[in-house]
Length: 455
Ligand SMILES: [Ca+2]
Ligand SMILES: [Ca+2]
Image (cartoon, rainbow, N blue to C red):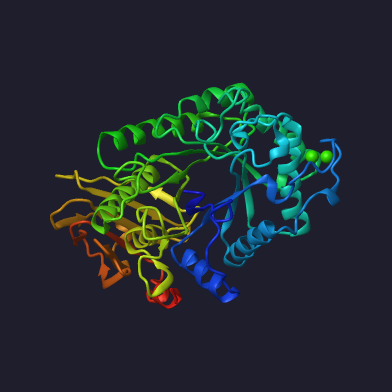
């Protein structure tokens, strides 16, 4: 699992900025909560108008640095996010959300979803952003670039020139060329196609064969994370894709689920805490199964302040009138207990569940330094006792034991330490709960309560 667990964030996109005027201390709380939840990477939405509202000159091969607005209000909002990510060691995937600038197309209807009239101008703009953030602002955290959010969807990429995948994939060639022209190709990873096929990613291998292995990370989005046949189908098809990617000898191509989330009731708001929690247990099953299949990481939708609706999506909500933001239990804590105690680069170990097992999922990961974390889900309605059998290397190891239970968790609960004896150990899994055993330090479990921002 080389990339790890992350969050999505589209807070700086038009129309999504926060109602509140946050101080530096407020942002420290907000990002403190992101960091505490075990965020290894952040998928952050950007849009070309923020730094190039008008074409900086008429020549995509000649970049005029005075023609950009790297000090615009929206760029300063991005810097707030990047400064915090830098300080906390969170890697940032910049996602250019869509076309993003009116001057890039002559298409009138839904212009923002159009393919650019000039691919080189589009590529010049993204390459200039990467250059500025890496060379002038010197952000280490800026790690990867995605060209478009969900270009396979007519909600995101449409018009006479927008014909996914054939019109879209050549954009990677243009962006690669302009990153090279500005000398920063080696300082950023290209992630794609960032589609949302929901478990039907078969075109990706075909397009890689056609356009060469120009991408560095393969990503797709999947909202099938609800228990049942559809999730089973998704896991199988991504398993096949990962196996195919592993066979490409020219290049290592890690695969991530760039978006997944609590779609327990389909693409609609779920505001009943019990139903949100039930959906959250399904996303935990999905996360564990994808990691076991060889996914390099997953990023959950979304680390954002939601109002008192779409509770299924927001890590921080305004459901409590006494707070401007605080963790929303059914989204935040199931993520935290599956992310805080694992690290990018850890090896996913083989797990096997014997006996009646429909409701039980497990993932076990180890570090090169012999740290171990075992995560278990009981997605059923009955309490279950499981007997953990491990190999000899774990004998007499002491593991911290934590759990999250619903429907409205207010934190991660700490239980008595577990000591493996000669044969293994029996553990009780409460109904609808996630259990984590780890050799890592537990850390301060009160921090989410301390960081919540009161009115
Ligand atoms: Ca230009
Ligand atoms: Ca130019």
